[in-house]
View (cartoon, helix red, strand yellow):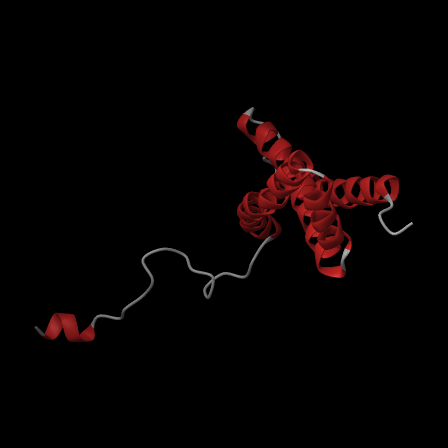
Length: 132
């Protein structure tokens, strides 16, 4: 009984409170989060398809919401999530093939993912230009 009272309780595995976040761990968490965001954002795409198939009145309701500040914010977030998840998935594909494991290459690939996410998002929104 005295053995158990002297025992210090510690986490069973490394925990966020023990280690400071690194780029690869944060990007892994973001990859999961964007996967969830894509699942939720797909509801808006389904709404678009149903509204388009239901007629002009239903589509007008969707278009009014999508053109509002909240709708544009959701579409922007969905676009960012889509491109981040895609680019980071490609990075994971290279890891699956055994490439980019060296620390310097892993960090460089992470920065490429972030840069491509921004570039692709800005490009799509520039081409779509919903505010004009």
